[in-house]
Image (cartoon, rainbow, N blue to C red; front, top):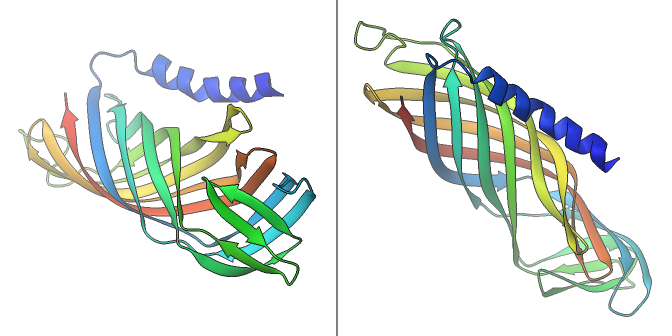
Length: 237
C-alpha cells in the first residue's frame, strides 16, 4: 500500500521534471506569504488515553482562528503554449485553535501538542489553545490570460491566472512521518513591474481529508479545509 502511494506521488513530480526540459520556457520563482483560515471541523480520537482506557471519541465543531501561510513555488510557462504552465509549490500553514468548550462523545484524558484535552462523562470537551503546523507540497498546472501586451511585455503586464493540482501534507503518525493526499486550487492576478519582476495576489483553497496526528497511544483525525489569501513576488527568467 505504501509503495502505491509513493508511485502516485512520484508520477506528477516526474511529469513536471520531464516537461521542464525545454530551455526556451519562461521560468518563474515565487516567494509568498499571507493569512490562512481553516474551517471548523470534528475531531475523531482513537487509541488508549493517559488512563489506559480504550478511546473511541469525537469532539464536534472545533473552532479555529486566523493563521499564517508562506511558501516557495518554482515553475515555468510552456513556450509553445504560453498560457499553460507547470510548477511545484512548497507551502506551510498554521491552524490556530483557541481554548474552547465543545460537545463530544465518549470520554478522553490526553494531550495534544503537550496541552491537556479532555471529554468528561457528561459529553463536555475541553480543548486547549494550540497551534497545529502543516507542511505540504503540490505539483500544479497553471493557466494564465496575458493582458496589456506589448513588444517589451509579450506576455502582458497583467496576468489573471488559475492553479490546481493534487497536494500532499506531512502528518505525524506515531513515531514516523506519513503523507496525506489532498488537493489545492487557486486564482490570482500577477502585475509585472519590470521585465523580470512581478507582484501577485492569490486566493487558494487547500484540503486534506483524514489528516492525522498522534500523542503517545492516541491518534487524532480530522478533515482540513483551509482558505488563504497571499501576496508575493515573482522572479521571471
